[in-house]
Length: 242
Ligand code: PEP
Image 1 (cartoon, rainbow, N blue to C red):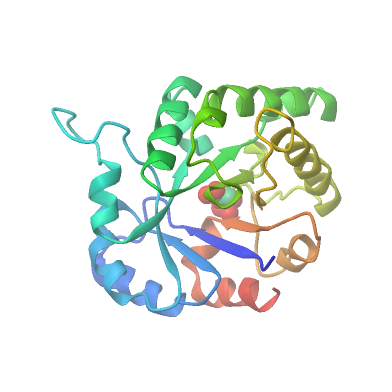
Image 2 (cartoon, rainbow, N blue to C red):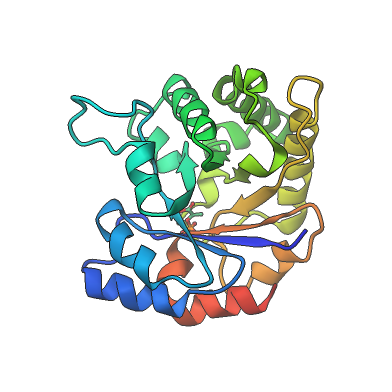
């Protein structure tokens, strides 16, 4: 399986012309670009090889939900992927209940879900076993009921292991540590409930310098890249290390 690189631009860049320039620079096969909502229409027009992703989506198709964006609206812009449960959204109060609603709605509408899971430092400092328990609980709550969906296929669910302490801190996990957790996540996804042999990525301070260490691991299906995806030269190095 070829590796996938997701560029999560978060709330960047500042202007639409900068977004278009960045999208052109990162328009490569095997890449998913997730810009902020206002830039989706123009980035969608620019991309030839990369696929388009959204950083979130609401689960109700339409109605009085100020500030929300529906899955249907995203699909009209050729969005194929949606990041759900990013730790920055969980930090703003997004619960597993909400995440579960969004995942189920996105799967039902044939979007590929990129579910982010990962433990904060207060858990990790207690050891790997505690971190595994935390991640297992996230998976159970976030994926509750998805096994009943006929649309749940291995390709429609990507999981990103993103230890919260590694996101945006410059302190990436060690590749061996990421592999251990990713094997654990895969074991959970392959359990009788889900029976899914799906892709699991690593995310958390991936850079041009350390990307190869993660991407050469056969268990790691790719990388979710935040900060480094805003710097075309850095992002190119990550892609070159594939
Ligand atoms: C992310 O946004 O999910 C992320 C991993 O960010 P960064 O690469 O900056 O740590």
